[in-house]
Length: 411
Image 1 (cartoon, rainbow, N blue to C red):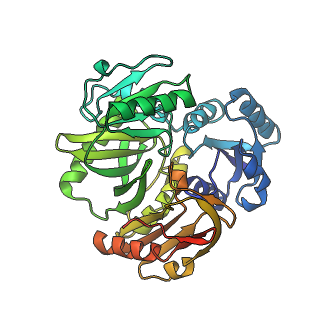
Image 2: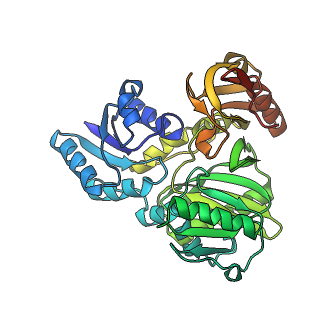
Image 3: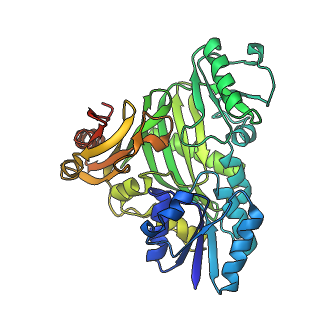
């Protein structure tokens, strides 16, 4: 039986969409997970034909499970991951057990923020940075760039362990907090980049770059920088498109990517574009849905085709401006009920509404992207209209925490 093994999945978002797509395409779907909650909720993953509990930090254990599947006659066509931290492991396993249509070395670099910075350190789009080794005292004299700065672990994901420091006193505190949390981990300090932030989704097939979408990002700054709005540009301004293409081409060339999926987060500054982050996969959350609403293709499906050795196609079937508004909470509490979802869904221009938490869940102001609790996707003929429709609909959603109401959408 034609089989695809997925290394990890989230309960929603692009990784879950990949599973549903694989089943729809007729593949036997296997998920490796070390999430005990997913095992308990196994029946909710109806598109997963087999879920295997395994330590995903143990390559030998995973190989044992793959060998068991082979002995049972499973014809493994590819091994993939749409999850942070597992793309490289998946590509290594794929290299051993089936034809690998990805770039393992590039995946390894892109998964690690430090390796990315070091590999691209001579490029004009790389911010200034320095590295603090474990147990190494920090001296301001080693920092050749000005405040404010960002402080982060090399393998932080979803804005976790990514901290802002406006001065030396705050920097010392942030360093102490991270070193206490993980004393054996290196820390990156890098200049804070001012400017509008964009995200670009792309596929590389036989060394040719195909841009799936360019998005403007809205960022809410609380204890962390959380992206709460995405605007998919039906038609990006010519200058911006050209400049983003130039950075993307350089990254793909430097990393020698022949085939694969990736996304870049970039900031446009007075001194050119700066690379904030790069990841070897489609973005999570609502990304696949918003691109489908904008252009009519399914990026997850086309990514799977690429990894199966087939030709991906990003031909646009429509061209809409799309805005996705995420919903966060401003105070902590236990969720009693949610109101307004149906009203939001029936609002003009709304394509999709998703609400994640269930009654009894403890909600908290965002410390990571995982603390975004709902989203609304709206489409229109202009970005201004799509944004207005999405925000208006999102404002109809209310989380009732304990005995209070908490409205959550940024203006």
